[in-house]
Length: 206
Ligand SMILES: N[C@@H](CCC(=O)N[C@@H](CS)C(=O)NCC(=O)O)C(=O)O
Image 1: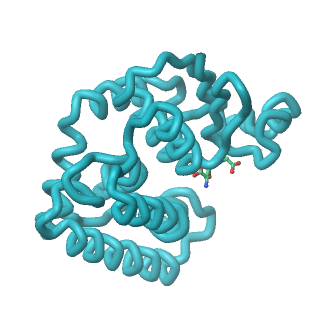
Image 2: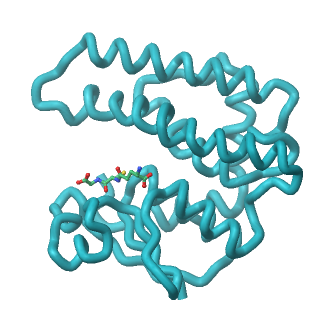
């Protein structure tokens, strides 16, 4: 059975969404990153980077949420694109999410809520970058139901969690009609609702 080490984090939610879509059996092991459990010797033996999520798939430990999504998609045959050129796009979206959307949205969370010494310049800068990403995604979703076309994929799963909490980050997507519609459509999926129920019940949810 799959074991997921995670917490109430954006990257853990991606994996929960995949597991919920596919109905794979899994066991959840909470790693309280706010209490420093990611630094324990036991967890470092699982992921020397000291980060969640991690999965054990019966053969090995996998780290990096988007890489986990890819690995599970290859295993199950769910969440990829059949057309090779669309599959190329899907990979590009996973890289975009990990290298651009994730880090910049994450900086907003840091500078608006976590930093001990606030820096309004940093917040303005990261909000501008995130707003540009919102406009970009909105354009890309013009006349497409999902980010790679007609089929819901792991690229949508990867991009969704930061956008779900846009209000919490002080960002607006309401004017971006395609993106708002996409977000609502993913939120309404029974698998998303199931994973959010589980996610919101993780102990010590802030
Ligand atoms: N690129 C990694 C990022 C993982 C990551 O940053 N995890 C955070 C929570 S979202 C974490 O474990 N932080 C604990 C720490 O850095 O000490 C992924 O996509 O899985």
